[in-house]
Amino acid sequence: MVPITPLDDAPEPCRLSARALVEAYATRTLSPVEAVDAVLARIETVDRTCNGFRFVDAVGARAQALAAERRYRAGTPLGPLDGVPTSVKDIVNVEGWSTRHGSLTTADTPADEDAPAVAHLRAAGAVLLGMTTTPEFGWKAVTDSPLTGITRNPWNPERTPGGSSGGAAVAAATGCGPLHIGTDGGGSIRIPCSFTGIVGIKPTFGRVPAHPLSFFGTVSHLGPMTRSVEDAAAMLAVMSQPDPRDWHQSWAAAVDAAALDGDLRGLRIGIWSTPPSGEVAAEVASGFHRALAVLTDLGAEVVPVSLPQDGLYEVFRVHWYAGAAQRLRAVDAARRDRIDPGFGDIARAGARLTLDDFMDASRARAAFGAAVEGLFAAEIDLMVSPTTALTAFEAGLELPAESNLERWIQWAGFSYPINLTQQPACSVPAGFDGDGLPIGLQLIGPKGADEAVLGAALAFERATRGGLDL
Image (tube, rainbow, N blue to C red; front, side):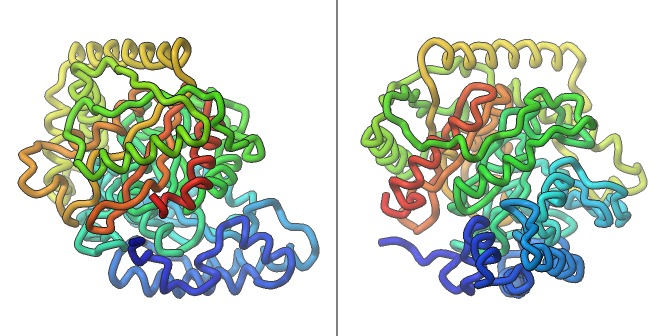
């Protein structure tokens, strides 16, 4: 039986994809103002329970929608995202809005410029609604913070939506706009997508320009979170336009959303079924095997692969904790008593790391990345895994109750390795567990193969109607 979805009580404009909205605008069956008003009302309703938005700019959104409506009336829309409601995670700068990073230690001071991804979306006519919730500085894979409290999963408000882009996931899943900017330093796009039954891609590092650079450095990516692969591709095509402010942007050519063919015939897909840390829940494993059968039916050859995972948890831990230490150093000393205790713990642990610790971890990371790239070059076209080893657990907790784990990294074993390798990875819905909670399927490609990853995700989505008949 298919569970009741978070969209079941949403008004029609809130159910539409970006593409459907733009088609409706062009044919005058719906105006951007009507769509944005419906989404703003939906946010007000949903946030009473789920708490997905830190800030909503209703006045600004309506003004942008009115400008888009005028362009459609004149027959001069800016492109395939003009007038589409869009949110931004409270870690990415928007001119005129304060970026609080989910923290009581940050100043309520408006940013003086858009981050590159925001600037590109704004130029394409996207209507910026507001900022979605995040744990403090995006430090963990669930979403609660000293600033905004607990964000809850719309499939079951007693459960977490995951994180750190949990607010964006809630917004997408409930119809509070089709397009949402997330960030992913260890799974922060893919984990909440898996937990809430939506689509999200962590692009190849450097594909989407970032400014300023994250304190977590080169494990941190920006990407789209949506309800469909098609919308994710269209959003990524805009976000991935080049920007000189990002010295790391090496994939200067933007993603071509029209290049997705959704044909898996003849592809060799590696099966990654054992994470370097954490255990795979039985229902997740069962859902994963059903998903593999779908890929086989679509013409792919699926084969087991082995990744060199020894010590990988420690490699990521050093990178992540070092970044947290750097972030804490940037916090005014007089305000440090206001930080999330968990963030403080990992930041202080990061400050105790030595230069040798970091250089050792960097060399191990490079060796792992080269080995996985070599696996793609020699044996497989794509790789597939569960997005997460478990489904959503109790809201407000970093770890599942009675798990005996120390930190979130240990249960995120299918996501953080792909931040180390900087490869593109997309999560798509792949059914439900016995409690009606979503399960995600992760598709991974070599560096630069974002379009191939999205094409495979599109094929899977079409075959399963978004994973709902698995």
